[in-house]
Image (cartoon, rainbow, N blue to C red; front, side, top):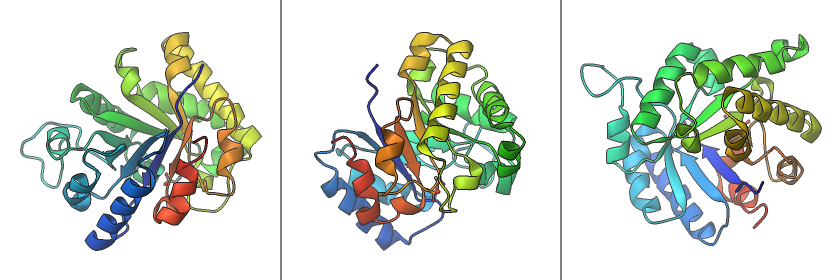
Length: 251
Ligand code: PEP
């Protein structure tokens, strides 16, 4: 089953406006002949400006969060409709920094997932275990729970717009990467679990990214694994010179 590599950058809470525009312009130019799927997750306040830069390019504009409700009296929130209005096509949900720093529950993440999909946004749903959970041998159990909770009420048809990002929390921003073999083992488990939740066709088609200190030095080996279909990249996505080489794998 040939799945297209999907390389996404998560800029998190970094950059000022000029830097964001510079990076976006650099990526549009550098990736214009790229054969993979690309996305950048941009801070809310720069989305509109970056949208003008990536418009018409092969880079999908992503947000890093979205409200679980529609427009209305929800101070501080940003809706799916607002994101779509400015040209945003995707939203990263369930990132471990939102789960563990902000305290987002699986129930809230699921509401956001359903709202985003019902609004026509693609979803990049992050799952992954803490170090203590891995050491306790619970990595698969944690991923299974986060998948079934996060995808509750999502139809097989809607799964065409869902990407799963497996991000072991102990590997995010730490410089520690799962070995390609360990990452492959859990990606294979995730695909098998999606087959149980849906069916084999959905599982065969779903893109499963790896995230956690992916960089130019380790991306080829990780992406050579049969069930690793891309990457969600934090630190290395903040500069074109570190992100573009990852984006170029397989091209
Ligand atoms: C992330 O935040 O999704 C991530 C994988 O970060 P980093 O690449 O910096 O580990």
